[in-house]
Image 1 (cartoon, rainbow, N blue to C red):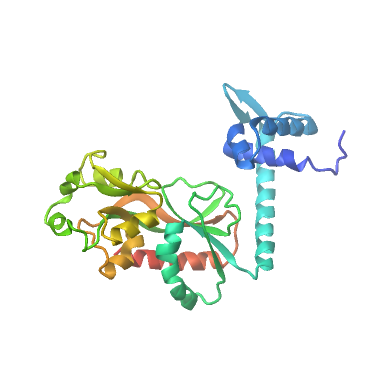
Image 2 (image 1 turned 90 degrees about the vertical axis):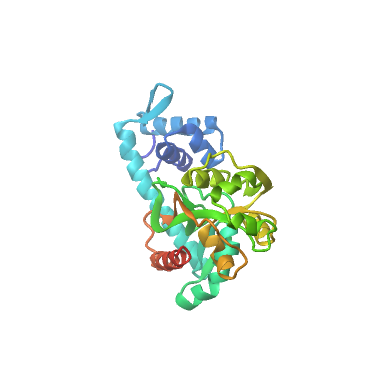
Length: 300
């Protein structure tokens, strides 16, 4: 029998918190980098410790009991406090740098060209940029905030600052051999054009086609690139017509390196700055305000 002052085993609480939040033992195991069986064992340990079940099985799924819901709320609050405190201590250790995650293409094509402006506008902010090609996980592991272009709903663990609508459109270099011919036609001319595309955004061209009344799968696909950064660089080099977010090519269009003959269409996605729920860092709303102004300026 555990002493009344003792806490349940931490690993059991971690397994319970993840399972309750994700409503899945399998997803909890994936997030915690352990096996399905390991999570199940930790849940049994917790239930043995408490002397009562925290989940009940319904069909093929698990549902929290009344006591399980009470424990979930307490554990979620405690873990949020621990995460916030850990981040604060880590930031103190690294000279108060705010670690911002964003996709590599956004970092290279949008953030880096604006860093000098950011430093001038927010001189108090010590920003550390972290490139990541995969979307941040729900816990924003290793990050104080992340710049994301995606569609809601958002993870419940996030504090979300909406910044701007995501807009995409075809772009090409004035040096592209077929550029003059393409400019003289409406978007249907692309049905005869092998377009450049990227594996990281396979739905970009179909979404744009639907917005312009074209068959979603009718465009002939030409050269593929692994990342959006390479795709836009290929367009700048005159290799063909690419599809790109408006903000990421705004500088190239302003400089005459790219043209967007048919404009940009909203995707239903939103640029957001997400931070851990409960974050009280004053740099987060200040950064969100700055990002909102910059992104909207690039979409006009």
